[in-house]
Image (cartoon, rainbow, N blue to C red):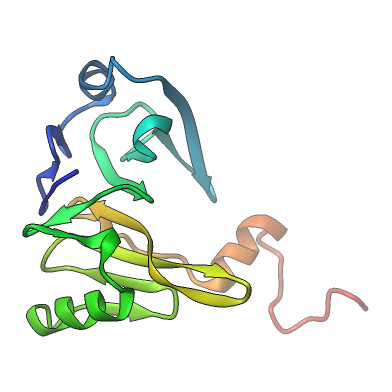
Length: 167
């Protein structure tokens, strides 16, 4: 699969809706599902033969939010990202993208529209990326709720972060 920054991968576009993506992938077995974070539901499609998870921007599949590719060939500028050692890949992208976002699990490149993530094997990070996420132009700008907001969502509005729930 070839990354086209902020456009899509191969012939799958971020502007495609659920029906268009399904038609483009009709030769494959597709599993429809959903993800839910707090009260936001996103439609998903999983294509096992491609090891590809497609997450749509909402629960009806109006457009694609991101493509996640696991353990398959993913090309960016003629480089197979899954065949490059993770540390080399991170350093290579860092040279071209000063706004790269790095944490212990991987990185996201706002400039290039993708992130690479390491796996864990026997409590150690893998040498090569486990997955690559190719995202649309609003993916990184989504406002993430605070830890207190998440706790309040699940435990109720009356939750007091200064109280001891075990008393």
